Amino acid sequence: MSSGTRWSMLNLIKPELDEALATIQSHLEAYLEEPAEDRRQQASQLLWQVWGALNMLGLEWADAMVMDCRTLVEAWAEAPGRQDGHLPQAEAVGYALTMLNCYLDYVQIKDMAWPQLLVPAMNRVRSALGKAVLGDDLFLTDIPLRPGLAGVRKPVPDSQRQLMFRRARHVFQIGLLGVIKDSNDPGHLMMMQMALRKLMLVMTEQTLADLLMVLAAAVESLATGVAITPQRKRWLAQVERMLSALIQGKVPQESQWLPTALYLTALGSSGVTGNQIRASYALSERVLNQERLTAEYDIMCGPGSSVIKTVSSVIAEEMAQIRDSLDLMARGVSRMGETEPMDQQIRRLSRTLLMLGQHEISQRTAYWADVVARWTGEPSEDDLNGLVDVLLAVENAMTRLLKDVTPGMDAPVINQNISIHQLDQARTLLVAESRSGMSIAKRGITAYMEANWDVLQLENVVPTLVSVAGGLDFLGVPRGAWVLRQIGHFVDQRLQHLQGEPSAEELDLLADALSSVDYFLESMEANKPMGDSILLLAEDSVREMFQLSRMELATP
Image (tube, rainbow, N blue to C red):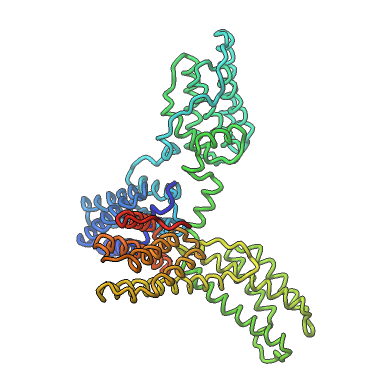
């Protein structure tokens, strides 16, 4: 897994990538209808450009999938005019590009990349190319075996060890046969895990004991819910053959078995041995377990931001109508002119929330639809307040959905009894005011320079910078706030009160620091966060500026 500011560059080129992927699919569709070579070449060239962008971003495996797509498209040049033969390959390419688009949206929103999510698309393209599909040994090939996890080895007599070897292998074989015949019975896998643990206990070689422990953890994961595919059944059969060779004195290569065993262990989420291996190897930092993999895949392939925003606007209109009706009721005004009863409006709202996967709030809304349907006269104050609370919960649920599909809108909310929408509006206003303050400060410093270092032009700069720094504290940007307070201290102590003109180097560093904070605020305003990397540059500029001026940084 890769996360953090590494993906901030994606925000800068995401529109161009979206346009390129759409154009590629358009060219391929046109080529299948009428095989014009220029269409194929344009699609191939764009795929090359997309590969370059993904490679620059460090989106591993996504760039490899795009290169496989390009290989398929390039192969069409050797057999022009065979649209029917190209159709399955074109479908694989189209599916891969669609999933890539979803994946880029996911990376941009979540600010993290899990290449596991692309495995189905990658395997479909590889199958179209005639390549072997990717196995479970894909993501953890660089992890070495950790020594000593199986505990200190105790000497065991050779005759006793050989006897236990054969018994344990026999138990493993019985379990394997059961898995091959009926993979739904975890008892067979538990037998196999027990056999591996028995072998681990009598293994005198530390390295082999540690490897057997990881293999036991992998089988434990399969026994506790990880999907058993034909590919994984074949791997278990290979483990059995490895055990047979081990009894004959042949030492297995750990690199051949460790990656798959670690990956299967990482997919699990329970079991004593599995928990120990997952913690020791920090597997949760590298790959998703099966439960999270399914959940994140559903998020990636779920409704896009445009759909969520459209539904959200419709729900907002319905809630506005319900609130208007409640306002009239609270003032004792007759509602005879209403075209639809309020309980039906609330019930429709509940069904919409259910379709969006908001089950809890949907049930609460449906309950209040029944309550409203039973109103015969003016409702009590408690009923009105209860309905208002539910409407606030609906508004917050939709706001959270919008946050999930909007980059840079993941600020945590502790108090759920207030309107998240209003908090977002306040945040947007504060960002806009902060940018306005930055403009005022920059204009003041520019006027100071143009007026031949007239300090009167700096009169409002320091208070403005302090004010914007306070706003950044509220926005949860302490690095930016620190930079602006240091700049305010520099302007006050160096530009306003010291004699002599500032050097060109000092002014360049001052401009760099101010511009960096302003760019960061601009990215927040556009919901395209740039990450803390640009603020780290601003901090470096501030420290270098103070060092050049032989000044001490301001203390907090």
